[in-house]
Image (tube, rainbow, N blue to C red; front, side, top):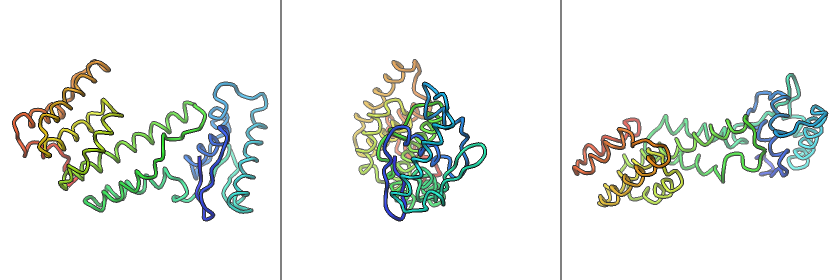
Length: 251
């Protein structure tokens, strides 16, 4: 877990300290209740004197912040109040907040400018969301939201690139995405469109067969109507219908 300040990037070490910082940074500038913090930091066994243990961990976080970012940094940023603790951080100091802002700007702009903003937002990801922190129901919810946002941004970026005619440029990215997210129908549909436009109809049909098999074996369902429409358009060599499968918002 890391924070960014004018003094540079500071890595926080230790699972409990990482979890504490992740909770406070994700909720910034709101205050997180002591009960939520304790439940996330010690998910399996709550300390007998939980409030004291949390206070000690907060003191350690304050010391580390001051040591790395300058004396007085913690006093200016750490908030103590009912019902717990908070952390005042600027948007650029929290990757998830910056990611959300860049994606919002991209959605408002569209076109090549949007692609650049999406790429900048996606470059903030350097591994799984909240890696190195304790597991808890609260953090699982945060992870799920962050991962959902990441996949949405990747999909929206690729839709725009396909509208712009950059189907060859996105092929490798889509092949990697479909390998990792094997039942993500949106990525599969995009890959079929890119392959078809690149003159690789057989490979587009192979991708449909792959995800159909994955969906049936893993979830017991058939591909959704949009994916079946894509298959039908590819089989008919119907370029206008293939193009119409891209959302109007990507234009």
